[in-house]
Image (tube, rainbow, N blue to C red; front, side, top):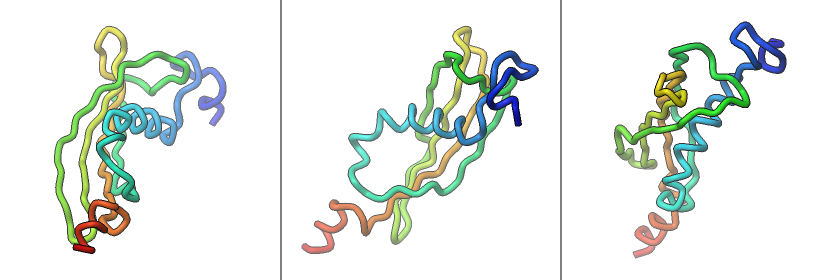
Length: 116
């Protein structure tokens, strides 16, 4: 669609769903990066919601989020988190809920425990 690269009915170009995921994921996970270690991560689920118009490219937004659940299965640890994009005036534009899984077998923490 030309709206992803040229002006759209909402003003400038709008973000593709993949660009929305990247923006919401990279900003929110950056604060956790040092705590995650080197385990292989997998996207388990992604849900995007446009609440007040589409996300515009080259437009400043505030990103915030929180972890809503942590857990584990026999082979993975997982984390559900939610992030949001807000206008400067606080108006919510978009939200994302994501499930990230981390493979235990790829983590030095689990390898050290298995060797003991």
